[in-house]
Amino acid sequence: MKPQIHTLPNGFRIVTEAMPGMKSASVGVWVNAGGRHERIEQNGIAHFLEHMAFKGTARRTALQIAEEIEDVGGYINAYTTREVTAFYARVLENDVPLAVDVIADILRNPTFDEKEIEIERGVILQEIGQALDTPDDLIFDWLQDAAYPDQPIGRTILGPAERVRSFDQADLANFVTDHYRADQMILAAAGAVDHDEIVRQAEALFGDMPQRSKLQFEPAKFHSGERREVKDLEQVHFALALQCPSYMDDDVYTSQIYASALGGGMSSRLFQEVREKRGLCYTIFAQAGSYADTGMMTIYAGTSGDDIDDLATLTVDELKRAATDISEVEIARARTQMKAGMLMGLESPSNRAERLARMLAIWDRIPDLDEIVERIDAVNATDVRGFAEKMAHGNEIALALYGPMAADAPDLDGLKRRLAS
Image (tube, rainbow, N blue to C red; front, side, top):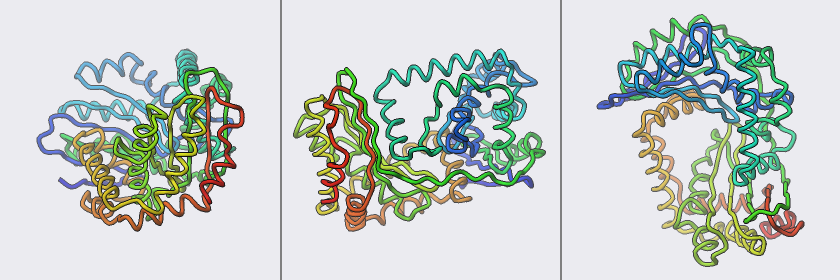
């Protein structure tokens, strides 16, 4: 069945998609408020709010929020990205109204109890500590900062510990007032759902929310930068980034297919050349991610300190080589992988609800799957070679390195020259 969309007078949007045969549903609210919407002194507050949503409302204690959902066999969770914060639940068909009510309650009636703030502050500080002890997580935060220095989109989602230690009740409430507006929220549901019933419930729960003038976020600007730290670890963690299209750009599907052919699976160029033929690493991959106004293709690998120079050089050489000899067979494989991943993922109500919210936020409509497949199929080897050429020449790159290596290896300027030659 096709998705159905309804917009309340205050700008709050509801999108649902019934999935015949399903006995459960996923429902959630996606808020256009993430890390890039924070001022520097607020860095980490969007994620802090994600945690506090489950810590009690005017109607429910933290325990009651968990019990009401788990008593019916469901689960409830949330996540924060650089552009959105999402609150969602998965429940059986008859319990969809309960899930909507609980999510509306945690969004509209949080108490931000001072005792709970202190407890959750400790939890988040532990989460930050865990991330700092996980090199293959930490390296991506470093890469983001190297590519977008001194910009909201370049800062960590968790925020620095010193900021997290300073947030108080007023800080949380002010961020909600500024960013949790009706016109910046989307209620998305998929599975065993009744569109009209969800709209009626949304009108009652969200219809009185105010609509405010839209707050602008700072435009992103990709830079060529690096961050490195010599550390006594088992491996050097290597992450390289190049700017790629935003999700509004016509080349967005070309960039994703290019990244897949380059490092999206065991048959990809990087996996075959770097791991299978040279044995320089256990893990290597490439992926393309997009934001509203920019994008970043990321290549990651872990290797020994003795092999890091060879790995970095070979990676750059594969970026260059793709511009001249990537084949239609490779592109066809990448297209098929991309379509299969998308279509298999949509068998899950949770993935489908997330897609509904994301597509509506980007395009203010839900493109048919046939339209997306057609755009993927339209990408050919000539398109990808041309895109690879643009990526290799005249493009900035960012680099992050962490582990046992020589202080100057590999050299960012040297990699840039090699890529452009």
